[in-house]
Image 1: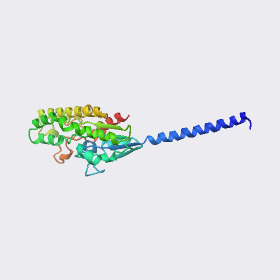
Image 2: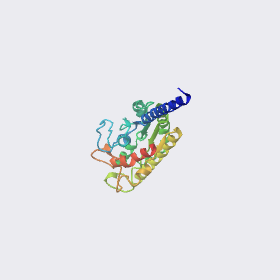
Image 3: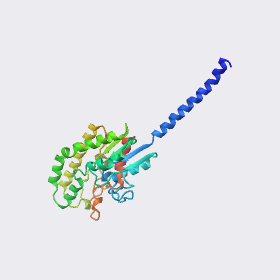
Image 4: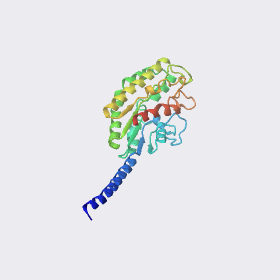
Length: 267
């Protein structure tokens, strides 16, 4: 066979080989697009306030919570949903963190609210004066939370896949400044101080998230105009028949408040 004829035969074969290589890379790219999502955190992430906990009644995990909604809206997402009502930073580290592995590509969480007893503080406001307790809690946020947040963020980063997206979500202001049955027993001064505590908590979480290299999304702006007693509340007020639902995001708060924050952080 002449050199010219051999050359004509080799070229198509080489082209076919290149097509095969590109097909392999395309298949690999398709596989890597799968999102291994672990949802950590407390009641704001598990879905308390939505009134339905069919995924886990003990931890109050809901199909109306933002982690489940996110997975439903993003095909190819494999969700490990371990957020649990009442969880503190210590609970996240001891009971939830084992779900984060080197195959985890997305992690979300709300954490810290139970460490400072935020829900209990608001309940206290309904039956007695809580102003001093709110002031004291705000003044000691860094001491109470700073190191614990660093430990959570740093450990999650270490345990997750290289380059994993880690999204920390904040807490909204609870009160709108208006009064209704949902703010029963809480004075305007206490409402202002509770909102000021939310702002202070927002700053502490943002500061530590930035220092530890994880993404932080504040919920303050997202929920503005939708607090308790507003014309379109995304947060439940006091529920005398089921106090555990009180002062947590309702279904709209999860879908229109928290879900867009995660979507904005993941692209």
